[in-house]
Each structure stands twice: as C-alpha cells, then as structure tokens.
Image (cartoon, rainbow, N blue to C red; front, side):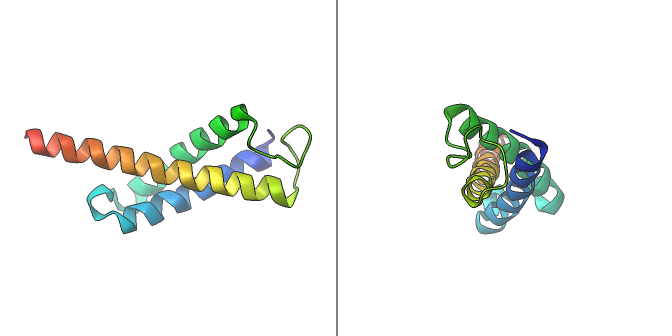
Length: 99
C-alpha cells in the first residue's frame, strides 16, 4: 500500500461517512463529525481489505494506480466510513436510551 491508496481510502471514507450520516438521521454527527468518523472508518476499512488481500486485486503488490485498485480503495474506504458512522450512531442511540 502506498500513500496514494491511503489518500483515496481516506477521502472515500469521508464521503461515505457524510452520505451515511445524511441517510441515517439518527446516526448523523454533523458534517465535521461524519467526515472525521468517515476518515477513520475509511482508513480502517481499507487496511482491513488490504490485509485480507482484497485491495488492489489487479496489481501484484496492492499498490499502483490501476483502475481495479482505485475502485477497490474507493469501495473499501466508502463502506468503512459508512459502517463506522452506523456503529457510532448505534452507540449514541443506546447511550441516549439509558439517560
């Protein structure tokens, strides 16, 4: 994994977090919160996919600028960002129910 792959995952995570926050109103953390959580989720999601060997399927070492690698990084980052927003939203909802 190189810096370009990581940047694609982080940006995709921020976008995925904001899209998920806008679609799931109960999980919405605001633009800044969605972006930060999405960036974190995008980085984690991309790293998990990379460690499973799913990132950069077309390139031999998972690095480079092939279309398949970029699409994989976008998908991993976006999904990771959205999943983290959903998890944080569920935790937020559970904490509000206890209060």
